[in-house]
Length: 452
Image (cartoon, rainbow, N blue to C red; front, side, top):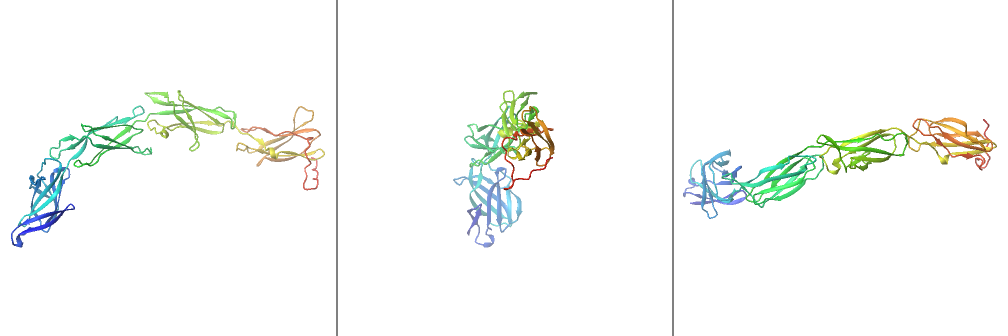
């Protein structure tokens, strides 16, 4: 009696034929068989067997396209599983004539005996080759300021599953991804190369910093996927930046020169580094200068009291093979300005020889002293020298209203004496016969102020 069973193998449908007698007691049990090769050894077969009866023995024939048997494997050993769901591997090997996908006939005898169960597994054994990057070299393994180009070279080869002999694989595409050091924010460098007749390929690329190199050959039947990696280190050149102290004893806001020099260490000696960008200031408000052939740079900036900081940041231009550098210079001798507010400084006539001078002292540089000393000076018509009519210390808003008795004619002005880092100031000059109107309130004449 012939019995036909349908067996699912790796998603395909195969047919198993049981040969036995007319008695059902001797009929072969059905098995579901999945065929593959042992990981790492394509010459050995791996079988996943599921059935109602424990397996006693297994024989597998590997067949060519014409049905002829190329190899027979009989020494199968239990690897893992249960009596009815088990994994088996052959201890014997099959050396096949070419890389291809082969048909397999599996014959299983149950542990309890009886007729063998035969399963036809078409195109179930993939006899393919692993690939390798042989003789992979990275030159130089460490880049530096003067040696940035990296040569990556290797041979793409496939390995015969039986003999383990490597054979070059020409005309294939190899891809490379270069991942640069963290915190550089550099994009991944991607490139491809085609192997020559000898299976060789090369990449030549400038590297701005240390990196990890990933090589990939993607699956092309019958050659398996392979990846490889290597790394490139870096040696960082030293640099130094100097900044000379600026000129002092100048007024706040006046232009001053900040002069400095950039150097790098070459074979034990410091040499100028020309053509580089130097930054002055804080993040977001940089001034820029470029070093000349002597490595020198010059910033023209308004004088101010505080610290000037210059920096060399090569990574901003994508160079990570020379270290950053910075330098500072203190400047604390800029003199602040004081000034009289033009619109708020007047001389008012109250009648007769009574006058009032009012005004306000401004701090145009944004820095104020604790107090200012106000002097009101007069000069009688025909005189050549000024006399101090009043001296007063002002605080807070530095505003003043001062009564004066002035003979006719008299010139009047206000003065702030210099003190510490604050310059003095002089108001415009007033003349008490220049037609200043009498100061009035509403429509009534003002009450004369009492004499002092």
